[in-house]
Image (cartoon, rainbow, N blue to C red; front, side, top):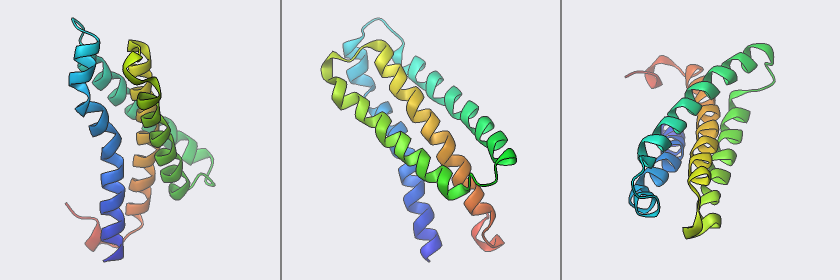
Length: 130
């Protein structure tokens, strides 16, 4: 039961930054008319997540002290920091800052994902099924 609750909380925490950025699409379209910022944010975020997952897996193979729990903690701290970019910049946020926030959040998401996958791999089969 505790494992299930832990993974539900981590899953919600993993999805929250992406959904928070995605929900601000109307704000960004109003702030940057005639742009495709929703596409740019999605591309920047997803590309960064993929790159970070690959880099994290390479780091883990050479540095076993970089445990799954450390990767999850680093990921959540980085995602929290990335979400602070938006309220600090406020309504005067620049296009580059909006994209940078998505990139930083993607880095955190990539590290957290690899950590969560690593933790779940050590669980018994009854917890790791589709």
